[in-house]
Length: 185
Image: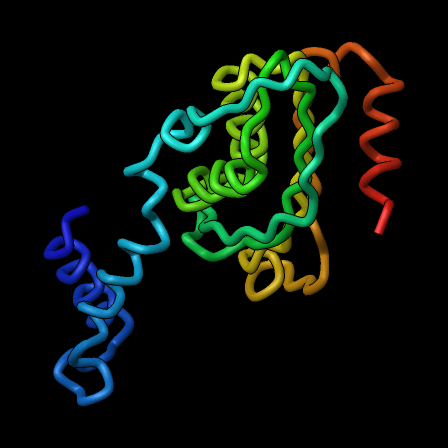
């Protein structure tokens, strides 16, 4: 990530909205934003294979689910945050991955400029490819600040996206079981 370009861009943005970039409260803002962007866009420097490569033999082909994984991302259209919960299930081949790796996979894709629809599919595809899963289902529920803070201004509205792969795509019964498990608290 090019910190200097980000700093220059922030200075131009501040000047563009009529601010004085030498004002006391804004003097360090370009540097702070550059450091923040390094953190919130760290997904560009990571690959799902890095976190999904450590697997464990397990000859059971039952659903594994991790739900309510909190994520924060940035909309590529307005560069405003969207945030919510990811719910993931997969049917292992002969191997399972540590459950924290599912959350880490969500983070890799969330920490990029995104649209929710693409992110949902990227998570599902990564789990299918890297784990050789028999099936994967991913549901993301998110609130988008570009819709709640500006534009139509509808706070509390949530966007839900679903991606199914393999056996989840083929079996309505499996999808229904996913949704039943999602309701268990």
